[in-house]
Image (cartoon, rainbow, N blue to C red; front, side):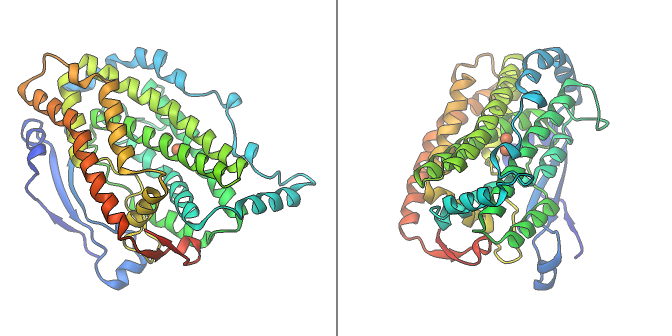
Length: 387
Ligand SMILES: [Fe+2]
Ligand SMILES: [Fe+2]
C-alpha cells in the first residue's frame, strides 16, 4: 500500500510548539485501506496523524544533562538488582521437576473459576506488556535522554535499559500463565502481538522528554491500578496464585511510577512553565494505553472492545483515569505553581479543572454501558463477552 503523506494544519494546542520551536509535522494516512491489504499488512488499524517531531528547543537538552548526577542518585536506585529480582519461573510450574504435570494440573484447575471477561482483560494486559520493543523504541526517540549507542553509560540510558529489562518479565510471566491455563487461543494472541509490534504506537511524544515523563508517570500508575485490580479479582475468583502474579507485577509498576513522578516533579521545580505546558498538552491529546493499535486480524475495534470489557469489569475505568490525573496534579502541586507565563497559567487552569470534566464523561460512559451488547473475542475462541 502506498504511503500517503500530507502536510496538515495543526490543532490549536500545537501551534506554539510548531511556530516557536520549528517542529516538523507530518501526517501519514494509515488507515488499513482495502480488504486485501488489511489482512496481511503492518499498517496501523487506525489513522496515525499529527506526527510532530523535535518540539523541545535544543537548548533545553542542557536541563537533562544537568540532571544526570541527580538521576544517578535518585532514580537509578528505583531499579532492583537482578539478583534481588523475581523471575517468571518463581510463579510457574517447574518444567524440570518431577511434579511439573501435577503443578500444571493444579494451575488449570484454579483457572477454571475465572470468567471469560476476566480472561479478555488479562490477555489484553499481557499483549500490552508484550509490545515492549515498541516502548523501548519510543524511549530512544527522546531528545536529551535517549540511549545514543545501545550501551550508553548516561544514567538516562541506564534507566531506559533497566526499566525495559524489568518490564520484560511482565509479559513473559503472563504469557506463560495464560498458555498453561489452556483457556485461551494462544495462536490468535500471538498474532495480535505480532500485529501490534509491527504497527508500533503513536505516543505523540514529539521526541520531547517533558511529554514523555508526564505520559509515563500517568501510564505506570495506570498499569499499577490495572494489575492491582486483576490481582484483586483473581483472589475473589479463588485463584490465589494468579492474584500473587498480578500483585507482583503491580508492585513493579508502582516502583516505576514513583521514579517517573519524581523526574516530573524535578522538572516542575526546574522548569515549571514547560512542564505544565507538557502536562496540558498530553492531557489534550489524551493519555491512551500503549496498545491502541492492537489488531487480531479480525476485529478493527479490538482495543476499544478490550477497554470496554476492562471498564465493565472495573479493572481500568474512566473514573480511574480521572482519579489518576487528580492524584498527579496533587502530587506535583500543579495548583500551587507560581511564576508561570500567561500560557502556563492557562495550562494550569485547564489541568486543574480536567478531572471533574472527565468524571462527567464517566457518567455518560456508564449510561452507554447500560445498553451494552456482547461481542466475540478471538482470544477466547470466539466466545462472546459483554462490551
Ligand atoms: Fe509492565
Ligand atoms: Fe510499567
